[in-house]
Image 1 (cartoon, rainbow, N blue to C red):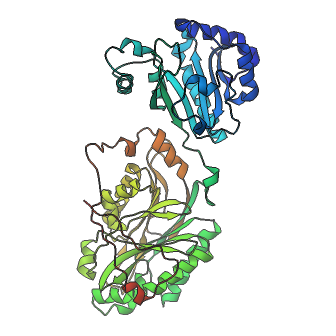
Image 2 (image 1 turned 45 degrees about the vertical axis):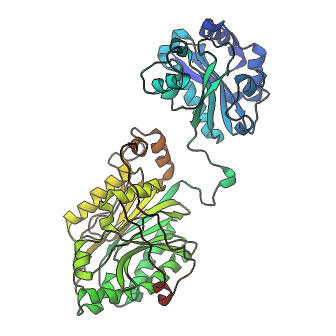
Image 3 (image 1 turned 60 degrees about the vertical axis):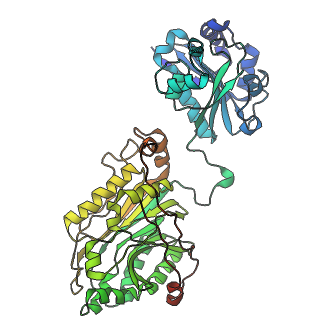
Length: 531
């Protein structure tokens, strides 16, 4: 047996007519006249498909392009086809409208209908159409009309309590029922003239009018695994940061990612002071370091996730990560979950804001080290549309590192996103509480066919200074969300449980320029409590 899916040709009409008569024998054996098929092949040849089995056409799908807003959801088959003339076809239409799909009864066990739907979907993607609309018969409804309404019948078919040869098949091909139509196809006694308005959305559709300057789905990450060592001064440390910015810029990276507390080597000058005093001395230079990183983001045309640094605000000490965009703006995230070590040695307090950040490469989230071990935070970010989660971290032992690593991998899977972790390695003498470090920086993915089998996109050599440069494809996240083997975000039982914030974010407005230290002290921190 030889099976081929291809576009329909005029020479196929004899086979087409024979199959149609067999298919619709129960409702009078209707079929399309040859002149109408010829017209479709003239106005929209790429939209007409057939399946040929051993040289004979036994299945077919016909379609037109329409500007769907011209018709809306309350239309009939006659209206959408222009009283069967197909004059409603619009070569610039943004939707594919299915006007016919059938399989000869003798060949229905070959799943040929799925091949035709796949061909339509591929056409939608290649033409950049919003999706497919169609009116679907519900031929088994006549058996249940005395017991339930069409809406109840459809619900039971969805739950697989009732089988309908047409609707069950359409639902299995990723269509959803948008509405129940009445009087859609006069003469359809099996469906009692009811029909389902079916919709399939093209997840790859791009609205050209709303297209942003940076629309490439492939995002390049430069993840730094930072070697802790003593620097003679702050300028030397910043030159090392610039080295990495320059390096990833040569590879046209979209993001440079630095680790948590990458600038703590500068605390060596204060090692004779108590820990809380020493880190507050380090916080005094945060403004200057931040200013330089913002300049590097602009000059090297790369968004910088600037690790984290200590910040004093209204007398309180925070662990803060910064996002420096390449357009010159920057924003901050304050670590929410402070480790017992940070509390004991430094007297740090946690921040109170959970939100995503918009970039020219999509929505991102920031969490710092310990934060990633609390799944509620990243789930809230996922609900806000996060596509990439960046996690600067600092761990001293391998078991501490493994907590961060395994939790980060879980966050990528459960939130259908990429997670990039960046850590410090090596030893740091003469800086109390910062003496040893262990890290293996990495980029993690969800776990499905679109991604690596081990859900690891890239990872560094443990305990070696280096930079990971790797690409992530945001379109694969959309594909996973819509068509994955499992669809975690969609399948949550939000009727049974939910994760919510007790208070909405009141974040500081996006900064387009640096504030002075005195000005920053006048800005109150935002407050959010997670339930």
